[in-house]
Length: 180
Length: 180
Image (cartoon, each protein chain N blue to C red):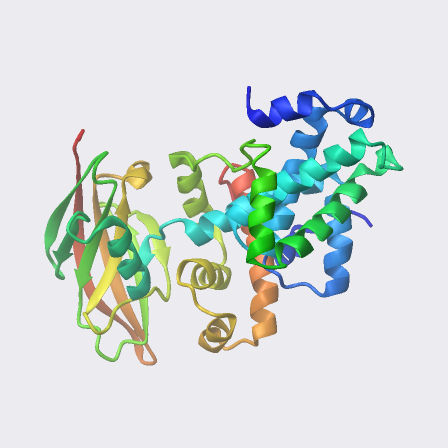
């Protein structure tokens, strides 16, 4: 068997191959050093996607994070459209939540953009999770994202509707850092 | 010196030919991958590594491995039997845990660095929009394949194939250091 393409190994890791393919892939895995190294790195990548804290949280992920960290300890900063707010992060506060409030009744799809104050795009995701019941989009702010852009960022959220796009809000999120 | 290394230092015969470094360095990561794939948890995969390596070492010590050039096939066969054993119930699992305490070598990947997180987010951002949505929905929003298929108006089979390809693209971007 020649070295299988990467997507085959991804399928194997996700248990989405037939039994015959599984047997052939596993035989190759134990025989081919370069493929073993690639599969290990693919497994690490999938593990990071699965286990890392994503930037935008579903209601369920938020609940789990609050349970893990403790909702009394986890910094949570509500911010409404047009407002500017500040969150404080540091070694003892490595994760914080921006609770971006918006009128989300009837919204089916919400697009998210993170910009520099000058308007340069840092991150843009379409169809992101939101909590319609609470009227919130939750952005997890992590100390290790510090290098991704300036301390102050602008977030724009847009509802995508059959008739077009509607701006839900623009938020100025300022990050301040402490040594403790 | 780790207990595992001490245990291996007494191995004679075939084991000396193969060498401790070959066994640990070459096969421990593959056994872990096999364990993650078939047992579903890091802890069980770690147990599998210990059990399989001990069994292979014993076989080498007793000269039971017929073809040293094809050691990978022997290790894979040992993995299959060990997984079968591990699935045979709580009592058996406890016995294997005790057996595996003979070796305490660490096989887990190192912690994620800030640079790795930034590279992953950057590469995710560079994926085509549909791939980006499939990866985020699958791994960061815990949505089922059927839900994603409905959301994106695809079949579940399509979603699986697109997910494998998207992971391959993401992997290649991360391997290139984040360049598209």
